[in-house]
Length: 317
Image 1 (tube, rainbow, N blue to C red):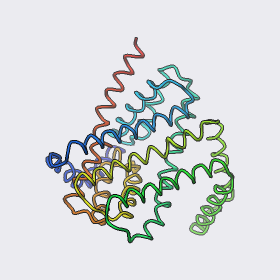
Image 2 (image 1 turned 30 degrees about the horizontal axis):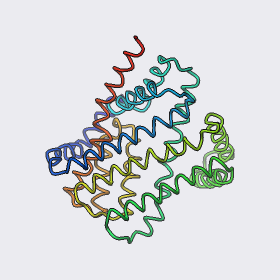
Image 3 (image 1 turned 30 degrees about the vertical axis):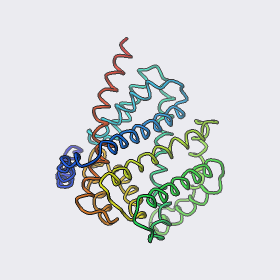
Image 4 (image 1 turned 90 degrees about the vertical axis):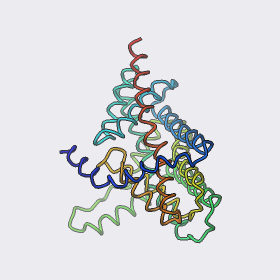
């Protein structure tokens, strides 16, 4: 059934994927320096994720984390319901590397909670920039606006981890909205307390390393955002800053859609459309989207295979 749903979804979004991949021949128009820069930024993105998992798993070694994350990331981008499949593969590889199974479960859960919380917070933090809206159409303003949002994200994350007040307010607000929207359902009463329990669970796992984990989480999304900016600069576009930021946030949320592996097709369609609204020409939007997805989606696939081969050799030696 899941394969059928995935096949139908891929059929519906196939035009977007074909349009993006069809722009591959235009990559020759992009300076190799920009392509190299995007590669470096995506390596930095992955390195931040490795650092985050290293903190949540409370291990000092890098090799098992790097190889297992590369492999799980690759399989999650090709398998239906990829997130669950990728998590299961990384769990198995880490346990095979000698890590305690309960520590692996808890550590990976905490890492996923932090990255998901950042994804959900980014669009909300971008709202003031979107309302402000009228800023010059150049990449300097796009970069500065994005930097401001990520600094806010770091500040909000630190506040939520260090104080009960923001989580209590978020919980009460979300609980009040949910109860008003679903008047016939049993009302929620303990959401603020549940959020605090989950926060305490994160702090118990991270200990004094929570600041490093927070920096790694914010860094993961910052370098990913810079990759999109590099793709836009490479095609010579001058987009509207607030909508580029919103485009990035939308792309990350669309990639969480489990109907296709890694949000394939949904991200291409959504990101291309949003960049067009941001003032990028249709052709440049397709090319920038393909360049961004080339480094964030397609190239990690062979890297995952390499990671799995290295892991098997380490385990069997």
